[in-house]
Length: 191
Image 1: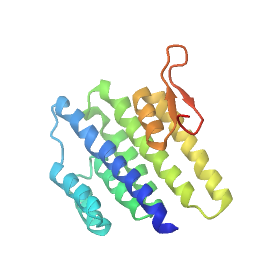
Image 2: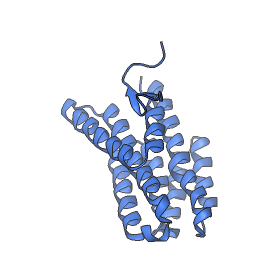
Image 3: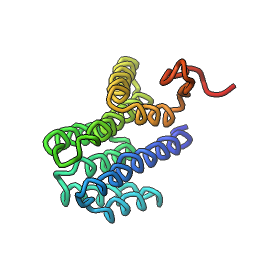
Image 4: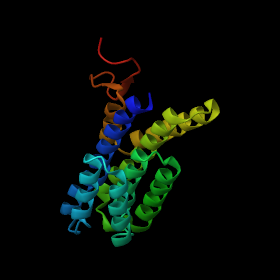
């Protein structure tokens, strides 16, 4: 049964890496700042695509060592930790990403800061959600689901589009009608 569940976690983790690791890098092109280590980020992704998460972790560790003052390095490593199902280390990378972002946010245009911060909280939400699905203890599962809800609310407050993306990643339908913009359909998808 564990083998059947792994591809969903891997797919979600790879999507997370693309979203959190590569998408913000595109925004930095407009900020006039060099995007740190794009080759290393690509290498992490290539290793994950090839089913080599331990090699991806080595590359992610190198990325963090080369760019310790870039929050995206920690988000890339977070994704690898999720694939390896080391949720404590994945959360530690999220925490470090937040710490680094807060210390260096002035390097980004003010118009990008909420979006970038929302990406970090999106990573925190996904990490908690995936960990909750792997938790053996019911109390721990509920705690992690609560963390997910808190982080998802933070994402929504910071950036509506990132929140919609998060909803899409987890399979929640977002009603985009004029009257109920942003309302999440709690159902099981289209019927």
